[in-house]
Structures are given as C-alpha cells and as structure tokens.
Length: 303
Image (cartoon, rainbow, N blue to C red; front, top):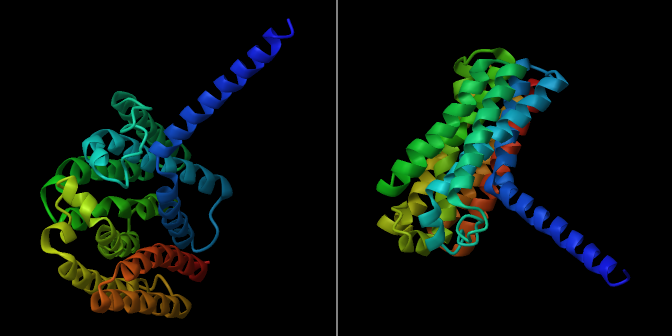
C-alpha cells in the first residue's frame, strides 16, 4: 500500500506532464507569436472601420476566429513544409519534424482550425469576414507554401499577401464590406512583408540554401537583398500615408507614420551600407515593432 501510492502518484504526474507536452506541441503548430502581430492588425482595422470602439463581444469572437484561421494555416504549413523544416536549423526542432506529432495529425488539426474559424467568424460577425479568413489560409498554404516558396525568388512578394488578410477580416467583421479603405490596410501589410522577411532571410541564408529554397539572398546574394530591403521600405513609407490621402486618418497618424517609417528607412539604409548581421537583426526586429505601432497609431487616430 505504501509503495503503491507514490508509484501511482508519479504515474499520474507523468501522464499530466505528457498531456501538457502534447498540448504545448499543438499550440506550437499555430505559431502564436506570429499570430499576435497579425491580430494587432485585425483589431486595429476593427477600430478604424468602427471609427471608435467596436462591440466587446464582436472583438472577442473576431480575435478567436482570426487566431483559428491563422493557426490553421500555420498547422497545415507544418505538414507541407516538413521536408524544408527538417533541413533548416531554425526549424528542425518543430513537432512534426521531430516526430512528436504525425504529419497527418498536423494536417487534420489545421483543417479543423480552418473550419472552426469560418464558423466562428461567420456566426459571430458575417460570412465575408469568414471568407477573408479562409482566403488568407488558402493563399498561405496553396499559393505560398506549396508553390511560390519552392519555385521563385518572388515567393515572399506574392505569397506574402497571405499575411495581409487579417486587417480585411477585422474590417469586414465590423463594416460588412471591403471598401477602398480596407484594401489600403491590406496594401500596407503587403508592402511591409518583403523588407521584414528579407531582413530575416539575410540571417538564415545558409538554412535556405541547404533546404534548396530560392530565397532572394540565397539566389542573388546579400547586397542585392539589402538594396531590395531599402527600396521596399521606401515604397512602404509611401503606402503608409495613403490612409491620410483617403481621409481615413488625420495628422496624428501622419506624424506617427513618418516617424516610424523614417526610423525603418534609417535602419534599412544602414543595412545596405554596412551589410552586417547585426543590422539585419536590428532591421528585422524593428520591422515587427513598426507594424504594430503603425496600426495602433491608426486605431488611436480613428478612435
């Protein structure tokens, strides 16, 4: 009796620990850190469409639906990219690569999340928002992961549009349409994606070479990539002030966009001139902060 009780307790703790590890692995499939930035753009778009603070329940369900849509896309990506992930040091510890989750289960999990996202968004707001969530998933998996990522250096330019769907989800959830204003928000994220991603690609160029993925720095070298980061950052600054030209935002946002964009250009220019890993890392990390602050500034201006 006295020896059986501790043994049973240890077995129970091991079972709980095992279930916790499985749960964490499935959460990892969704890439929650990536989704957190996407949801910032979704939430900001809701504030902008409402010209104030949207209904709290609508915000909650749209955030849940947005997470499910992006999480579903990411989970399916673990299935489609398992060969690439296994060849890259940055991704070779992922659950599917390590065999902790089977490819089929990752695929099924992603599909289930995608279906759940459509139901949550469609029933809580409208079916246009649900369609935008699914469209982002399809573009990310079907166009970027399965096709462009493996075939062309323009993969992130075209396929990166998948990351621009979250503000469309937020706008549609509130407004029930996709006006020109919504597509301006889409364009901002679209133009932000190449300089953001290429800064990261400069840091893991060797990984992409080993995995035979035709990313820009692997094919055309670092100098070409650094110049493209700068050129796209300048273009992005121009696109970022379109909300002001369209009457969607006022002077407070304009000032914020110019300051934030000016800092981004400063880092991109230094990256082009210096060509160091340090500046690639600085540019990459700032790009994350930039997008979040830009959309927050737009939301505050609208409210």
